[in-house]
Image 1 (cartoon, protein in one colour):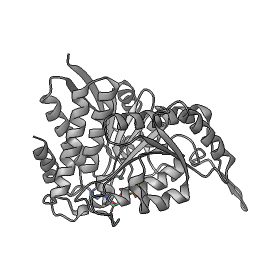
Image 2 (cartoon, rainbow, N blue to C red):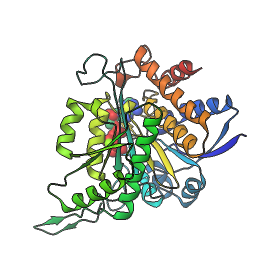
Image 3 (cartoon, helix red, strand yellow):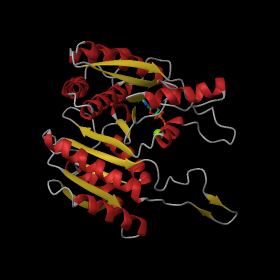
Length: 361
Ligand code: ATP
Ligand code: MG
């Protein structure tokens, strides 16, 4: 039986439309070849340019499209010269995360043979781990609402049982999936600062309680500072890492740096009922409109979407297509002949996306 999935598409600002269009085309062609699933796409206008035009950065109609969809594909939103009246940045992706309770920010970090990395990896070593960043609370809880007087400023770190329990369950389930596909030995590392903050001791306690339910998955702890060191010194040691919002924000940029830049870094923000798939990078207004942006991070995010939908709806063909798509990107990167400027090449967005499709077909 052919299952139809509705995908909400936020093509967003800056390079957004340029990287969204070829990504959606690839997905359409992939689904077109399959008897197992069908994809329909619905455009959801939102973002900084939309705000400048209409006064709404995330219109209710777009929110409805997102809510009613099976998955959400989002490129990037926000522009440096468009701000809300109070001067804050326009970032509807954060509103979306909050409204849909997307607590698990999933940031895979992979370094395959042939991929340029600032690390000096021992021969034959590849890196393949996933950082899970809690995305609704933590140190970003007071975002924009911290207390500031003339002499003092305070922000609050919020860790709740409700979100933490969901987060850790998600982390262990992901480790199980990775183990079952032979991708990893099955380990979850809780990254915190439990030696200094009681909130993180609480975080760790809930992690240990979840770990006890999964005897088949190894569990360990690491302080965030040591984790930054080990991500550089022995990144192959990690499998699934799970951490608080701001620590995750910082470590995921470190992860993107290890992968050779933002152009290859996909992500997902996942909750119990909804999920957004989007590249880690922003709207890159400096190169917008030039057909020069790297579409790979967006294409890899789409691969994560196929993976997630396939697992959720028990559709192995879709999972396999997700893997094929990821491997096609890896093939193009390893060959090194058709790369965009950010990866040291001269190819256009269109050429890079065509090369991915070529490696697939
Ligand atoms: P945000 O606050 O939205 O995360 P940012 O300030 O971190 O944005 P980005 O938009 O991510 O900035 O861009 C940072 C740099 O990386 C810019 O020079 C941009 O051109 C480059 N960049 C980002 N994404 C891509 C891409 N897909 N292809 C090529 N270059 C990119
Ligand atoms: Mg950024």
